[in-house]
Length: 264
Ligand SMILES: Nc1ncnc2c1ncn2[C@@H]1O[C@H](COP(=O)(O)OP(=O)(O)OP(=O)(O)O)[C@@H](O)[C@H]1O
Ligand SMILES: [Mg+2]
Image (cartoon, rainbow, N blue to C red; front, side):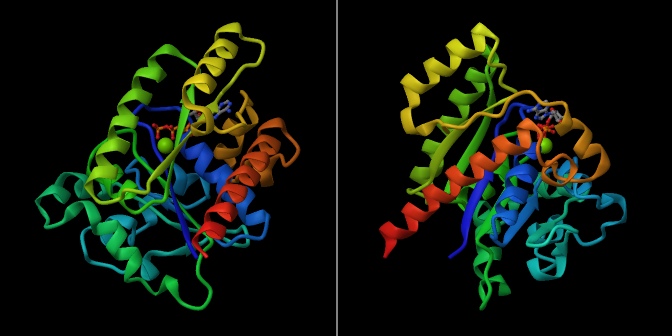
């Protein structure tokens, strides 16, 4: 069974893309088959895997525009078990023209449902890297997902964005994906910062299991790794953030294990 996860937050620069590539690569290294999907016209995820979006003619935008199948857009990365559907600037056009299409909020879900990926060796995980907005593309990702991960910094403005994201979750649940669950992931967390510690406590009291136990601390090695086009697990496997994303991957695997056990 494939488990679909969206990583989204309307707030920019909160480590959505970093979390997709780091978590994806940790899951791949734990033996899972993982597909990353770059849904952002900025194509940061595509570049972070060493692919040049300017030389990418077949992108996820072609799938949204109904011109290509997922299989023909798919690319292997240099990391075993980790594949990607790359993005390029055509995604801007997709976002703009999507709403004029019939049932436009389910285009991604339908494309995956009808793809040849569901054959004999399906992906264990598909991770969607969403753009920093709550538009048609993010809605498509949420409609296609079982889980939403909301990366959040421990700051006041992040909490306002969080409230909006939870409003979106409610709308998606009402609108055709009633079982969508969410998990908040604290990123760029500084344990020595009292405001950060207080905010974490506040989130724990408010959200309970809606907050991942694992948090991701500040680690400049993450910045360097995206510049060299490698996931942190391959650039600096023993740095703090690599270990924290590994622990997060275990937490996600554990959840999915329990989820699948409930289904059978
Ligand atoms: N734990 C961390 N410690 C230090 N820097 C980090 C950490 N996580 C991410 N960063 C850096 O913060 C910046 C923003 O991260 P990223 O691009 O993943 O955010 P994003 O939410 O995807 O942004 P956007 O909204 O533009 O898509 C990047 O330079 C990244 O390397
Ligand atoms: Mg991003």
